[in-house]
Length: 84
Image 1 (cartoon, helix red, strand yellow):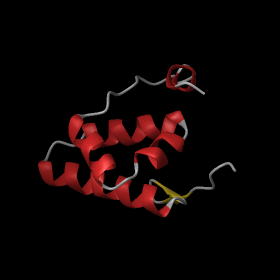
Image 2 (cartoon, one colour; image 1 turned 120 degrees about the horizontal axis):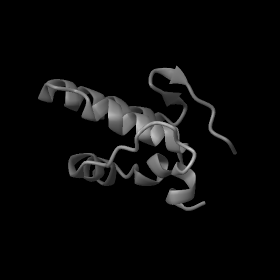
Image 3 (cartoon, helix red, strand yellow; image 1 turned 30 degrees about the vertical axis):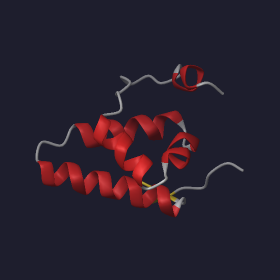
């Protein structure tokens, strides 16, 4: 499914991916894991990171997202069961 179609059903504003997030995903080899998540999760992660004011909070949220993607079964500290 194309990204445009995947995101077309979102009712919230769509957040752009900042370069530092893209670089972190690529550096950790997690871009595919990120892209496999539902559109709302991808968008929620970006909005959540983007709303942080302090650099320390931005980095903490980025680290949490990366760790959750690496684990594969967590989303925003909740159990996540990806579709097979």
